[in-house]
Amino acid sequence: MSPQHLTVLVNAGPWVSVPPPGYGGIENVVATLVPELRRLGIRVVLATVGTSTLAADDYVRTFATDQLQWIAAPYNQVSGIAHAHMCTVVERIRTDPSIDLVHDHLEVVGPAVLGAMGAVAPPVLQTLHWDLRKHAQFYRTFNGRGRVYFAGVSQSQIALAPESLRLQTLDAIPLAVQGFESLDLPRRDHAIVLARITRDKGQDIAARVCRAIGHPLILAGPVAGISDPIELSVRLADLRDPIHDHPDTAYWRQEVEPIVDGDLVRWVGGIAGKDKEMWLQTARVLLSPVRWPEPGATSVIEALSRGVPVIGKPLGVLPSLVREGVTGFLTEDEDSLARALERVGELSPEACRESVAEWTPARMAERYVALYNRVLSATRNGLESRAPYCPT
Image (cartoon, rainbow, N blue to C red; front, side, top):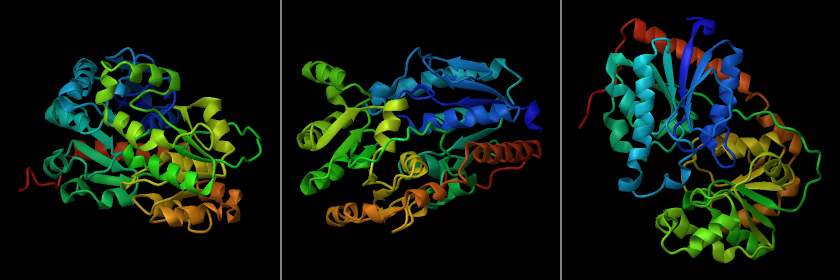
């Protein structure tokens, strides 16, 4: 089907506005992709929250504001949010015959609900943005039956997937970064970690290393969905506030906050726009000492595109993004991370920019359109998924 005749419902989920006001890797991808799809002539219906400002042809909204603060709450407190969002999506699908395909970005709940609809739903392509070992039971048993397919964000991510999921995954499409305005500011001395404050991202590792060697560090990202330091302080002072039950709150208070001195190690909250560009474009290095196999690493791609080298751990997609000794260093432990920080001056900003020069939004959109057509063709031809149903 020609892109000019396609209507795609892009499901960004209920967690963060599109584009995100600060943290929001998945939402940044959606905000990068949708304008390019529309440029190609695709009509986009965006399923998101009421505060989203991204231009689309139509919208599906359940919640007036984003629900990020609940995303890591206990299951019995949070499970209804994604399902409520999907109820609205399902209703739109049932009443809008113009929708040709759903491009889903909602973890597990999206394909589960859409798959359960069977032929009532349009064909589905879901982008997998996360560690595929996290919901192993679902991915081992789910069968899209020739109507729900997947796309990864890196080959290293797909390599960790259960066989059943790999059989339903069409390709891995690297993430692209949006265009940005160069602020033409001189480099400063600080390192930066640009990520949600959570143990998987390793902010405590970065803080300990920088504190030990006297290297300035900026931590940029929300704590338990809170981006404003003053708001966080007020809410933490109220012992009845449910933020105390959030696992990221415990991580922040016990492992990160004690190292944040406001001078050498600073937390600037969740940042976006010119604030984000200022801290990122003037950084000497981005630190990514992750504890998990990062599948897409949006912040790494953003840093490299701005000429900022990267130091991290050799996990997930990072070995395919960072060229050792050219655009950064990958280290196994804190001592070697400290040594790598001392060698950052050897790395070329031009080499960093060149390493991701071909990862453009236009190219990402073109590859997704090709996948849309593959999904539509497979559905029209009645091809069944090769994945086994509920394997033991």
